[in-house]
Length: 304
View: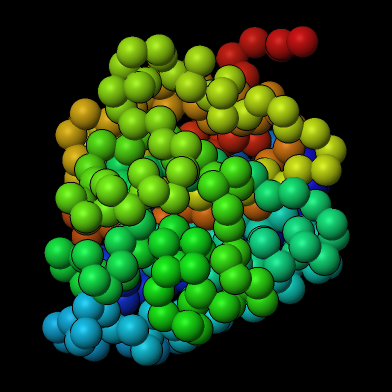
């Protein structure tokens, strides 16, 4: 695991249906993410926040809401994350809504191609985010980044990594899924993505789920974690715009993070969809920081 960390704030909610996730980066800083990482022995560089267009909060046009602004914010995120990877740092994107996954993962995929590395993404989310303009019920683009990375979406987002499609089914594992739109359900099935939904986790447990998602990791695989805070059950993490009941509880989420940490392979991270406007005394940001601490190897005991 890289010892130099770059925090990149991307304060926008242009892809979301609710305002407020633009305040996510500051909530994570208030919750002490920098100090926590430094206590873990890491060298932390807070790169501050990117500056992009304001949220016009207008209605969708041709199936896309705020398309121009979403593209601009994703390009900014892509460029900032790619620059930190180039200089040998681990980028942590402090979002912002999950539309930014298109830019973040495009940057990581570009870097992996240049380094001749394989890419594996652990996508922790209540949603598959595989909508398109044709099947979206809302036009909100935070429901579309995975589809864009698979080559379905606006040209600027689809081509951002320099290779179309940016991802194939073998590159991504989605965990914690429990809300999928009707058209999206069939589209993601056709794409062949490995989706470990909550029924799967209920049936086999989080340990077995994570063993499947992490098997075969080696030195030539770049592991990227895209952590949407709505992955968590809203009873423990209310500060998100798209709450879906029945998500992983605190211990299941901790086990998930600890097993990723055990691999020692995580090389980049997104933290997205934290909405302080809907939170209670920054509870969700504090829990997110606790889980990220586990992602970086905090254990109750010394383990082999």
